[in-house]
Amino acid sequence: MELLKQRILKDGVVKDGNVLKVDSFLNHQMDTVLFGEIGKEFKRLFEKENVTKILTIEASGIGVACMTGQYFGVPVVFAKKTQTKNIDGEVYTSRVESFTHGRVYDIIVSKKFLKAEDRILLIDDFLAKGSALSGLCSLVLDAGATLVGAGIVIEKGFQDGGSLIRNRGIRVESLAIIDSMDSTTGEINFRN
Ligand code: 5GP
Image 1: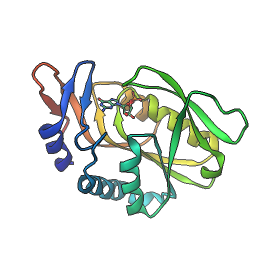
Image 2 (image 1 turned 45 degrees about the vertical axis):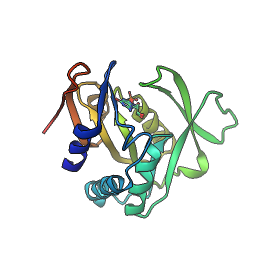
Image 3 (image 1 turned 135 degrees about the horizontal axis):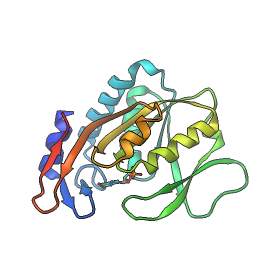
Image 4 (image 1 turned 180 degrees about the horizontal axis):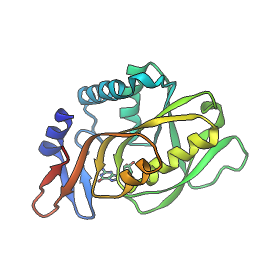
């Protein structure tokens, strides 16, 4: 998505440790007009999939997921991060390792909000090593719902999350795929 790539080049800052900071338009301050265009693009890509629900993970995925949900006209559910595993059987749970914080935590979704008849589209802001997306996938599988695919705003193609998930036969559509980035020069190269 050209508009997004241009914005990354303009405002993205490459940090040490393979982290791209985009908090002026995506992760902290949110550009609602850009989010609208992102939502429209995900709608175009997954239009034929009869999506009934969007699932994301708190916190950075929520904004984009909501805008996307508007175009599909479906509810958005976000998995909550928790340190205490809920064992009362009312939630689906999975384990995620945070790329940016290096911590392991559980994510939960109430069983009320994921049903076997649902057709789920996953949405997230970044795909790096794939832990967040894998965690979301297993919530969908546990619910017996159908996973139609994942929409990612920025995929770091030089990390292995994308191939990990795609090799499981899951459709992943990333609006910008970064092939390389350099924290010394600030250079960012996209896959075509
Ligand atoms: P993964 O689980 O694929 O390793 O990482 C995905 C999650 O980590 C995303 O939900 C995102 O919040 C965060 N993340 C991964 N890489 C980056 C990055 O380069 N920049 C920012 N801002 N967040 C990232």
